[in-house]
Length: 84
Image 1 (cartoon, one colour):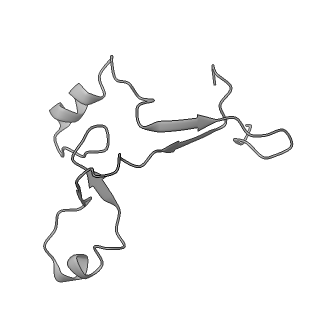
Image 2: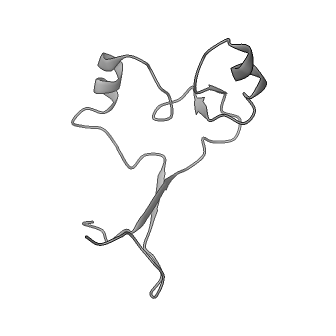
């Protein structure tokens, strides 16, 4: 809000970055659909630690929440974020 951005989305990890399944489950139906499921990077901030303490350190007071994100302002006359 402070900068007037109306759109935000995550950027893909850099080319060559190792990725792995978002859900690390060995069930057959998950394995068969793995090419269609979301993935995570081995690098922060696109890594899920599955540990409250690790996530808390990553998202603590000094977290760079804009890292790996792209922000834009909607062009005039195009819908931005809902007002309410």
